[in-house]
Length: 126
Image: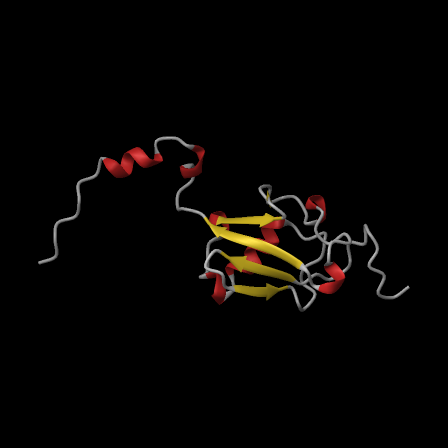
């Protein structure tokens, strides 16, 4: 049964369209490097190597699929329902890439903003 794209087949090769907030987009995985058993982290690493992504560091990437943030880098695409009959055969899988701010806990709501407000402004150029 060659070419079987049934649910649960983790060897199927996926092509993902990555859309950036700047409305540009690019495809990854066309050479068979991405399957439903690929981890979110491995997809982020591929994205970070692409010129179109602005070489965004893996730690700063947030991927969104069907309104759901792929937050656990250790989980597979299949864990999020990607590649199991959701357009995998027609190339209709779109992930949205949002580039996060630098620093570790800036999104945790701590005092990340307080440090920026307490610094003196830079002197004007001479």
